Length: 352
Image (cartoon, rainbow, N blue to C red; front, side, top):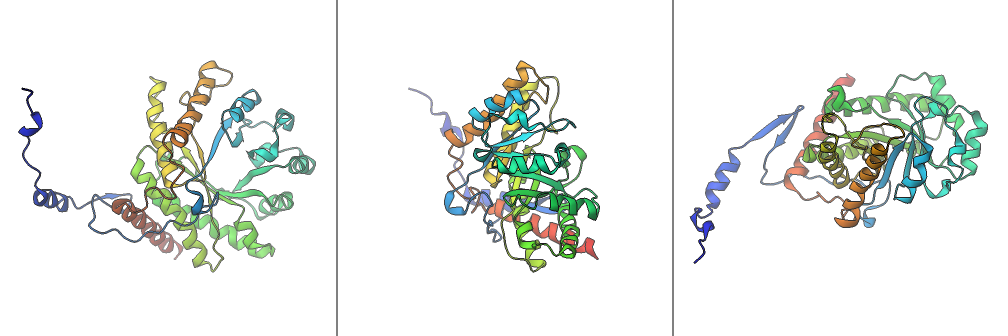
């Protein structure tokens, strides 16, 4: 007769379990209370997203950064819908996208790489360019630079031309609360300038993107990304501005990469991407586990594997079907609420 090994375990004692849970208290993480377990969650309502309303579930744009035009068509053929070109400081050459229908893909360019003047911008817009060419307002910009950028894309109303990005704060050793505070202060300065120009504030708010780097600490990152979207809504209310959804681009952080075994990076990249997906980011980029080597077979494989991480989450796991998949989790709702409250408190205190 087979031995029933499970019978050697003592019976489950609900009272003992409850006592152990209640004794855990909470951990302190970056200034906000990271409670391990809560009997009743704080109320947290996920704001509407920019890419689609809640009735559409949890869609996201699969983004990828390419440094060679040779990689463009393979990327598009394998599901990339948000194309990001990194020209490594060189001028962007629109001829490299001659075979691409720009009205069928979102193209994300750095304003620095567009050096062809108004004619080049107009040519791309006439070809159906949609996506972004966003100036980072978190970096010190003169009023003249901001005005020139606004004038340059006055006809590109479908483009997102403003962003707040503090780079990969995990690599820089910055915590989430401080980064969120920086986001709000950057928006304050931008809003003051925009009002002086008598521009259409509501229109420009709809042309914004917030960029966030996601680590492999899945639950913390889910809470942070949900809080980030709520932070935008609260900032709008505080400035008596109409509600509109913010586009959030999430990029998997490479802060844990170690050069010894590149394939080990796939574990962290998968965890980070998963966090971005279930947190409801609008655009998600998974970097290749090989880094950013050019014209190398292993790098091409890295790009393919990076795309497949997101394909598996969408096509195999069905993570695109439910709006705010983590909504209703007592712990995650509480964490999201705690982060937004701490970030807002820090922001207000730093204003005085």
